[in-house]
Length: 175
Image 1 (cartoon, rainbow, N blue to C red):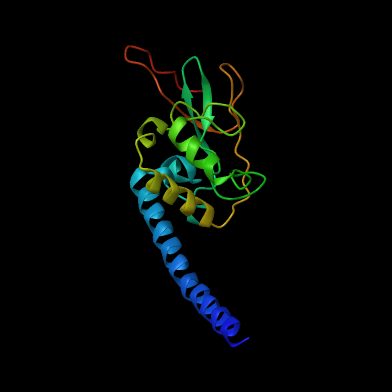
Image 2 (cartoon, rainbow, N blue to C red):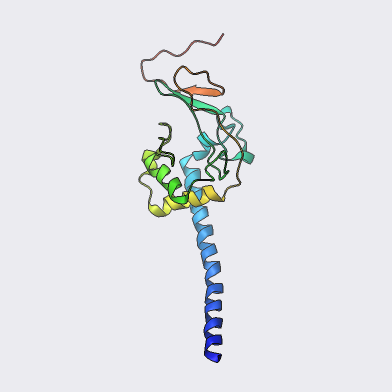
């Protein structure tokens, strides 16, 4: 009886001692992810108001209100990458977030918009990719369904930036 009590006390103390270490590691991972997201400029395409000069930081990474038109492909609006279950990536598994970052393929099999620099993220270490995932999942969920994507010629319901190849003529002033 005495031996069992000592073992139980030891295991309880060990488990209690490990919990704070795990929390510290998780906090460090989230901070690393925050740094990587900040340095990568994710805010630029995924935060409402950024391209209009007034980023709405209360909806940080909650999806843009400006799309990119890529000739022949359509218009793509930076999606909500907060952990909102309905309008963000809250229903994505950790490994699906990492896979999308590194391969450019969403969990549903669709490719990410060509403007998404997943080619650069493909070279992240596993630890850095997991840190970005940890940071994104730590954010406050933002309910914001962004419009699109829009096929070429489809009417657009948001502001857009046009990406043009060299030699193309800029569009005229809207009437």
